[in-house]
Length: 229
Image (cartoon, rainbow, N blue to C red; front, side):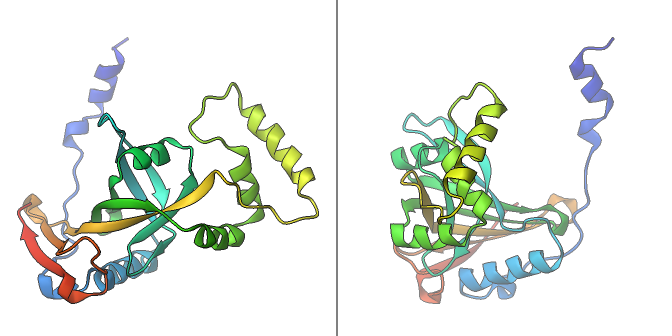
């Protein structure tokens, strides 16, 4: 039997490729406000039927610089930036507490598009967290209490047992907000819009904030540049 790497290479990974020929991107297409541009692209991704267009790959690094990535769900975007919610004891939260520099990528593959946001993360106020938590499905609220995210557990049954206990505990009352659960706001420093083109000569247009507290909907607070692919 061939070793596993020979079996993988038999599938000719190096020959897998897609021709990016569905569109082009010019500065005029984006306008002067990154928030308006992102909103238009997000709306197009949703209208195209992409599965979870709000899924974004979050990159963090700990205090020593060790990186990690995972997919999280965007739950809000406004003039401040991009928000998501998570367990505050998770690896991502520990990383962001130690090193708030972060990046997210929206990989809209079928549209040959990406949006890459680079910025700094800060915790969201508890009243905003409570409002969002209250809007979640009840099972998701219970799940937040069950999981000590990123901790090692011995078996899946631990989660199932704890979930069933909480179903009984909170049968007749609202599920409270856990003190270890919250949200993060990413204030962008740069926002890059990427459109695949033929011959791998992709269009890359990047907004850069002129100051640390730039509002996404303030066109005077951003510059727009074209990057080489």
